[in-house]
Amino acid sequence: MMKQQTIQKNERVEEVFGLFIKHIQSFLKEANLNHEEYTNFVNWADRLGNTGELPLFADVFLESHVLRAMYTDKPGTQPSLLGPYFIDGTPLIEAKAGEPLVLTQRPDEAGEVMYFKGNVSSTNGQPLAKARIEMWQNDATRKYSAFDSDAPRYNFRGHFYTQENGDFEVKSIVPLPYSIPTDGPTGEFLEYTDQHPMRPAHLHFMFEAEGHETLITQVFFEGDEWLETDVADGVRLDLMTKLEEKNGRTEAALNFVMRPE
Ligand code: MBD
Ligand code: FE
Image (cartoon, rainbow, N blue to C red; front, top):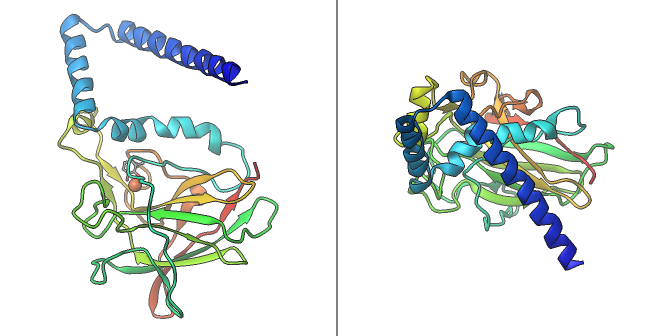
């Protein structure tokens, strides 16, 4: 049993690497690179690795193409990018009596307070109780904790669970449009290909529920100026919400539908 699994895995890896090298070679042929250009290309790829930007570059320019097969013609909420800024081991967020779940760890956190609520259900309409929701986003300085900011490692990161009726509500801040780093090899690439570095403001979510496919997705806000040209191509029509002034506070809402396994 073990042996067979290993052999199958190796065959798959062999197939994938075979295709990878075949298409890189046909890319070199089509682009007609001379030796100097080839050397420049290798140096750029080396910088991409050395600066730690390879996951960023891959998630911005490639991940969406992998997801396409997952969000086309399937029921349930469309997946979107995991992105390079997910980390695990985040704290469990629990509500104190009569208080909301709070995503930030700093009492004096800057930004426009936003209450985000929603419901998690299965494609058959059944609400999903105790579904695990992992959430992460950038802060008012537009940075992600544990990556480009000095905030505590798990600031604006955490997980919590839906109520019996599938509902959840969390207190956070309105996320802001994000510029991917422009000072490294990814920025070089953007400049040469004449693209801006912006992503529209977004919330990141990962939903896990018994008997269901894990749903990794993002939520975007109506009216954001970068929706149409998101550098990472993560925007999907059913991932849109809008900010509303209700009950004297800023609210946004979206429901999520998970696919049975
Ligand atoms: C992000 O914040 C992000 O979500 C993705 C997918 C890529 C780069 C930065
Ligand atoms: Fe992001």
